[in-house]
Length: 322
Ligand code: SF4
Ligand code: SF4
Image 1 (spheres, rainbow, N blue to C red):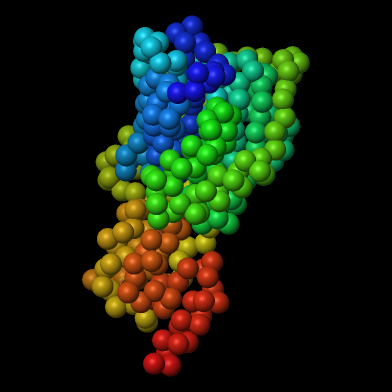
Image 2: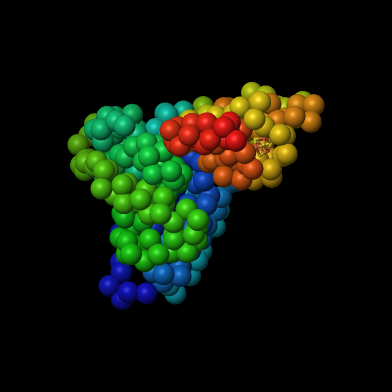
């Protein structure tokens, strides 16, 4: 650990509390795990970690708490964070329904995936005081072929002053196949983010944390979010908000229904299979990771990456000529 490293915040127990608010399937849990690993193994901090995750959270609001303290501090708090110094919001649309200003400390840091200005986001959040950082993480993820969680993690590491080089090396090592895309997403996030600082000007009061975070939560939601507990049906779920871009293009006539795509798809329900045949891709569940396109033996024909339209067309034409 660098002797010079200092946590920007500390509560009465010595913790800097970070809360990530996302939709199940966004990769917030994975990003927080990586953050925790970086903080402990690379920066030499101590702390705790708490996540709500699992297949039942897919498509529903979820959050992850990370708390850091100086190594050697007694860890005397566990479970979800109720008061955050740093809030990371994967979708601006979650702010109001979840009342994400509840429990924020004065002078908090808020990182939001949004195309809006920090001033507009401050008003949506009704932030008492602090620093608002906005980045178009969805667009960055799509353009770099990375995932939404990477630009959000990049900004979080940036505000925590984790050394950029160390972070990039760790990310490359963790996800070697996506190293180039993830590093591109990290750099784009840091270079394009817009931020503004707001003093406690009396525009919005500090809001205490309360158990119910607004309209959605475990008190008023069916078990497993929008999964109907009685029918155990997922038909009403919609993960489209976590999508990275356009879905793969499927051509039923080129598909042999070999099932290889099913073995790699991380989102059950994204690949539609009827009567022993692959029949299409459900855009409510497909997050556009393109793993199916990579593995498909008839890639470029049965399944095509819409980002590579021309290449796909050429492959198709070549394939047809054979
Ligand atoms: S991997 Fe390709 S050919 Fe096989 S079922 Fe999926 S789309 Fe069809
Ligand atoms: S791109 Fe393919 S593998 Fe990825 S979620 Fe969509 S259907 Fe599944």
